[in-house]
Image (cartoon, rainbow, N blue to C red):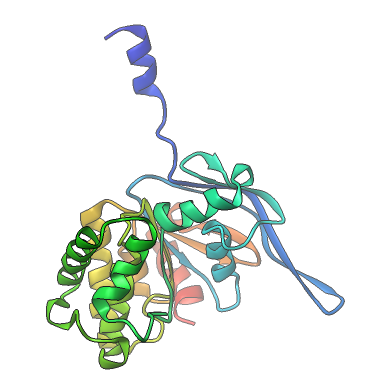
Length: 255
């Protein structure tokens, strides 16, 4: 192995996501609310991270900034090493469509389209041929256990089925990273269990990176790392050890 090869082999992999000194505030009347207060975070390729914390802590805001839906007031968001501040509008849109996948608490499916068509939509927008979009949408829905429901519209699906369609839609363009905001928050415990099992399994199988905001302790425990957002700051749970993990869940997750 030559010196150049040895040097290349030692270079650290570029994180899929990196936040450096991210701040975000809102104006409420005459007050300024600091929601994110200097957030630093890295997510490696294939790593899954649970984002937990009390309601109103700013988890959704952090996901919005990470997903290029909101710009930070200070700091920088890097996706695959590319600073978001260097992206023009077209590049940001392309990154949202192709680099990132989004799952929300509400499925937000298009009511006039079938499950299959909802999963095809992001592929068609990205310019894929219809035949290819159909085949991959069918593949994803089968993985979600919805092979027999592909022609059903959202109103004909149960809450858990609709959320699984939403997960399939988020994966339609083979993103590098999945961002999920309370993906099982609107579901009953049994349905929630089924949906997050599907979610975790498909993330593991595809090697996706994932940042998932959740109040569900079982889902959080199945991630590679658990981080807490409180008072605008992140706390890395893994640095606390197992006893800290249990105490943290009592403080933040079961609220």
